[in-house]
Amino acid sequence: MLKKGSASQKAYEHIRDKILNGDYEKGKKLTEVMLAEDLGVSRTPIREALKKLEEEGLLVNKRVINPSEKDLINTFDVRILLEAHACRCAASFMDASELQELSACIHEARTGSNEEIMAANKRFHDLIVHSSRNKVLIETIERMQSIIFLFRRTVVYHKRPHLIDEHEEIFQAIEARDPALAEQLMKDHLRADLEFSLHAW
Amino acid sequence: MLKKGSASQKAYEHIRDKILNGDYEKGKKLTEVMLAEDLGVSRTPIREALKKLEEEGLLVNKRVINPSEKDLINTFDVRILLEAHACRCAASFMDASELQELSACIHEARTGSNEEIMAANKRFHDLIVHSSRNKVLIETIERMQSIIFLFRRTVVYHKRPHLIDEHEEIFQAIEARDPALAEQLMKDHLRADLEFSLHAW
DNA sequence: AAATTATAAAATGTATACATTTTTATTTGT
DNA sequence: ACAAATAAAAATGTATACATTTTATAATTT
Image (cartoon, rainbow over all chains, first blue to last red; front, side):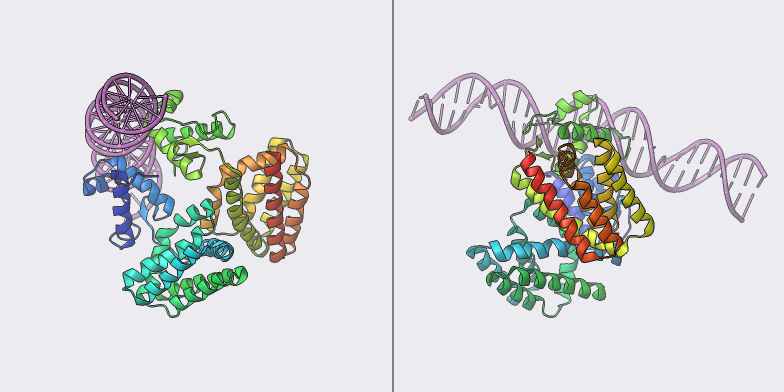
């Protein structure tokens, strides 16, 4: 959508990262002029960045989200529905090289730093989503990634128990070509993420 | 997102309707200058309109979509997942006034003109989606409405058999507070829509 | 003639100026 | 002192000019 390297794209990433890092007060109104001065560009690319952030739900009426528990649950309900379905597909369609990559993610997550664990876990889920071969599903989940990032950070930095073990089980179900089990395990896994995060907050 | 009555919004609606009506050749590249002259506004509101159309998937790289069968199936797969889930929720949560509205939609669809049937059927599905009380789910389906419109038009104008009968059955399952049945019937209903549309095209 | 590079032109990206709307602050009336 | 009305200002919406990139066309080379 936004071209990489463009002022709009850079503005988007910059503002997004500040929101995700908590650099803005929750509920703070972000104005175009303020951000334009801040980043040393005109309002035009800022507007495009803000539009995208609104789409993602990181801004609501130009205000930094302050998600209620219900908001988080709603997001996860949709995520669970879509990713569990993708996981069922994975059990049917994943090829050998994808399975190997999936396995590699688990290994990385067992040995890496927190940032490496987060990257490996994201890739684990991305691989499964992409194995659906459904572009609409992929893009729908893509749009939720910023919110999902908040959860991922929580579960990794607060060391949710069994996180990687569950990935291992999911991997085995996919490898064993058991769609029903793979789907159910993904559901359980994401519900556990949600449950943990809501309490850790 | 776009303010109602703004030039951006009007441009969006205008271009969207032309695409949905087939007024543009499939694959035609829509340029900002061309559309701006066409609508008598500057490029600025046109750009915002085009962004939104890209989000919805009506444009790809500024080109009018020419959806493959796979694209349509992918869209429907996601729709089925989300609406079937919403339908399950409906069986648990819908209140009396919503049920009455739902029933009214069925009646309108049995007696109205094609345009009235389309409006009533859209409302039938909207009511069920909204009964989920899940804003993320609602907005996700909202974004798919333009594509869904194409299907709705096909099944109504080509008079797909049992269309309204299936709505009736879904209504009864919701009224009977049977979540599993409501979900299954919605799945079957949407799969039948897809099947019919793919053959009617 | 096919492929490659160079050139022109068209389209998009960005900045800025102006118009309109929305918000905030102030005044006025009760 | 409070509410409604109003004026000021701040923010967003739109138009336009300029910059950069992309695409199409023509020229050149093999």
